[in-house]
Image 1: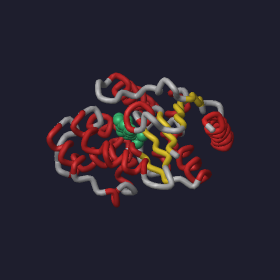
Image 2: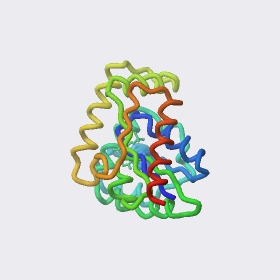
Image 3: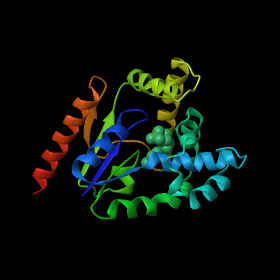
Amino acid sequence: MIIAMDGPAASGKGTLARAVARHYGLNYLDTGSMYRMVAVGVLRAGGKPDDVQLATHAALTLDPSEYDDADLRTAEAGAAASIVAAFPTVRAAILDAQRDFALAPPGAVLDGRDIGTVVCPDADVKLYVSASSQVRANRRHAELLARGEDISFDQVHADLVKRDAQDANRKASPLKPAEDAHLLDTSDLSIETAFECAIAIIDAALNKKT
Ligand code: C5P
């Protein structure tokens, strides 16, 4: 079973995807971490994220053991990830690893921007998780403050809006709902309610298939 969860930054898809994977006993892959890792690799090499050669090299030499590195979660890494993610060579370098992960038993939940449209177009269920930019910026601001970053709400909101536009308007695998995705707006939902809604959508979609 493969479940695709796409959506903009801080929409709640990561928390939901992890909980959904646990619920169905599936593997879980946060594909955003892969792009963040590429970006951090470029920055650590002293480069800029718009350097396509450095970014492609970082993508070809990704080390999955580093996906939990705290440096990946900073606002700087998120912004840089959105820049390296626009390069088709970077996306091509990690596409097979994402597909292999999805196909490994017992199946997986993958979250990202293009899982339902490009990485796993045949996923059993696709969810597109969204929320208003105010709500998303609030969530991300609280997360960054908890990690010790000194950043204002307005800065976080401006960064999110900019990142959404970059992700949605790029040519390579832009952020958009797959035609057959189920939409879930978490703006007014608690984590628990969003999880219950996601499970109801997934169970109904799976029942329909059988
Ligand atoms: O989800 P997260 O905020 O960690 O993603 C960081 C960036 O990685 C996104 O802004 C996006 O540009 C890129 N990304 C992508 N495709 C994915 C996952 C993330 O382009 N499947």
